Amino acid sequence: MTSRVGHELLNIQQALQHTFISTGGAKVVFGTLLQQIFYSLGRHDAGLDDIGSGSGFCRGGLADAVEHVVDGLDGRLRMMPKYRLVLSEPVANFLRYIDELGETIPGPVLCSRSAFATDTYTNAFFASPQHAQEIFSQSEEVRRLFDESAITEYCWALLCMTVERNTHPALALVGDEVRADVMQTTISFSDHQIVSPGADEAAARCALKCCMFDAYLSHIRREMVAAKTSRLALQSRIQALRARQRRLSRETPSTTDAVTLQHEIHELERQYLGEGKRVDSISGRLDFVARKLSQPDQFISSERCFLRVNRQAAKLEPGSEENDTDLKLSKIHIASHQTRVGALVQFPRAELLPKPDMLKQADLF
Image 1 (cartoon, rainbow, N blue to C red):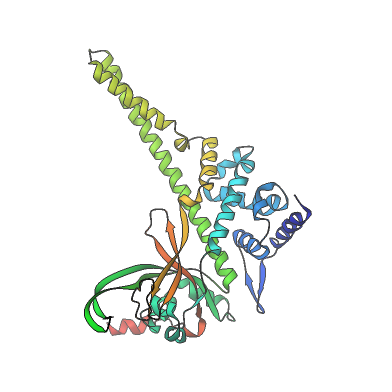
Image 2 (image 1 turned 135 degrees about the horizontal axis):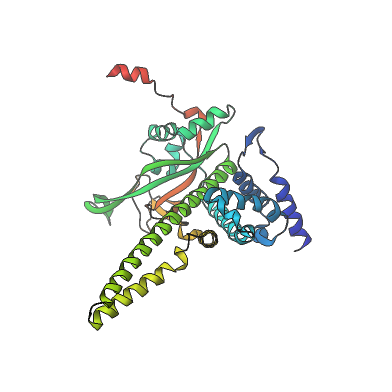
């Protein structure tokens, strides 16, 4: 390793010892290990290719990240003498993948009342300025962020939405003639969700990366349980077929039945011994975790997408002379969930709506 890379890794190691970053005079607390790691990676922009090389970062931040993974999945993995060695490279690759994924989210988009009148993004995302205020004001995480930091003027977060397309006849200029039967597709956004708010862009992206990291650990836990359940079901099925095979051997079964039964047993045993099913032993579970951490793209991925619309949210075809804007968004895929689009957004504290007075609302009824 070159001295430059070694120096960069040393800087990352030192940065992990700090729990505060400066944001215009304010102090934002990165209280978790993962937040410190992702902030350090983004801040120094170095050492990503050498995370798993066994140098400073591996002995410090990466080792702690491995322990975080083990704590989140199964503490019994520590019974394996070389569990850190087995998991270091997969965890390093996982950190790198999530870090790069979080940085690809486009933004920020200012979601304010004034922006609604001038910004195509805000105008397309929300039905009205009041709608934008309601979405952010209904988020408990947004309110908690502002409550915990009185000097924070803006909230940054990932805004996830579902894209809806509606095709209908509309007025359009065709040549020199205005026609009312031209089919037009309008784009609208629904099911808004505010994810991982932060006091600045760095904090929001770090919180988002931590959210994705821990979400994948939860996914791995569910897959471990499903694999073990499936293995038990296979074992029970094999035992039943073996019993049936013994009964048939005492009779005079047809050759076809015996061959079919043996083939079914052989196939189930192959599945039983499959790599993905061996989670009933500690060593098998460790291999399972290492393999899953090496395949994060099978759980979560993101790709850039562009929606070309005008101020009326009508989808425009390439080459249209009408004033339009390409909405640059991220299309986010998470396991079996519905694909959604998202962008990093910014919302001002001054436009947060007051908390509803539950007593007054009760009086209305």
